[in-house]
Length: 424
Image (cartoon, rainbow, N blue to C red):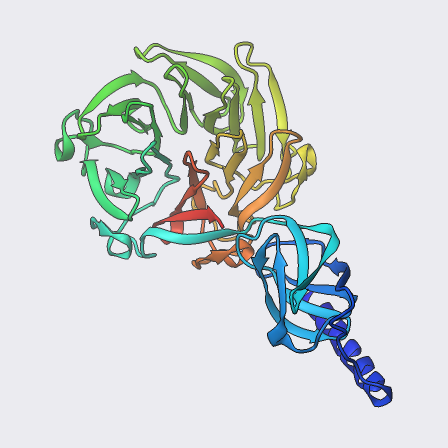
């Protein structure tokens, strides 16, 4: 788009130069400012837009262009074209040109598209162990680890390689909540032991729940770091129905199952016959959504009846393809999370070794109205870079969580860090 606009501007400037040989161009302060159209008609912050109209002024000091009331950067003007850059957080609305107190508005609204920016909340790309703030903290995500976030914005992550449950405050300060040595033992803080802490879910009371498939357990951890047994079972990914405290876990088997666990610890299989189910999340009506890692599809199970529906992906077909329902493609997905609008977020690379050739080095998003799959952030190239859209690089994202404000958190496995995604 940028190249096209620059080429168009070049032609326009040549035409203008030719016109000036005859009579030149002079803005008429007594005539109206007219905005006819603009292109492109939609885009995110930073998009270059060419505005067409009449009675513009080539004196940039006297011209103001706004998008939905937000001032845009003007990068070039000729007689009937103005090139602007869409400002951050502009929102959808009119493009207006003001010259010497007179304003003209475009007949159509510009459709603003939110962009998503990635930053590194904690960790620095190097494997190890250290508590600390931001890049001074070290993690060891040598397995397909998960995370969750509580109502206060604290992130809890299963640090499998370090046998610990880590807490990350909103400012990026990392502390160890519990664990640190290999074994199975209930206790407080460092006295607790884990074999393989893998996934995390939080409840409404500030408690967190940890799966340990090597120990065949789900453990409860209170805010002070005290652990206790909830139930026995080969639990991998898990989710909680925040309405009633009911827990659900996937056992990552073939054939695999989804288990329901009551708050008192009674567990039973409610869905069977799956192919390596990896993770599960629950919407505000009690419906379950499962990443079926073995077939690269996302499935929904209707609350109560557990009637199945494949909502995205095609069984056995892999790739990074956006689209509606079975037109989309995933590549061995792993973690899944849901926001307050029932949008689903899927961590793309659930290969056992965190493969760098996996095509989904990204977070995918599925909207509930039509099961439309899009690439939320990242792309197909592994790496480590903060930024927006496809410029943000991940290397084997495995865990994903979303807070009450829509902020998304990601376990970036091979980079051994926690990434934070914010819609600007």
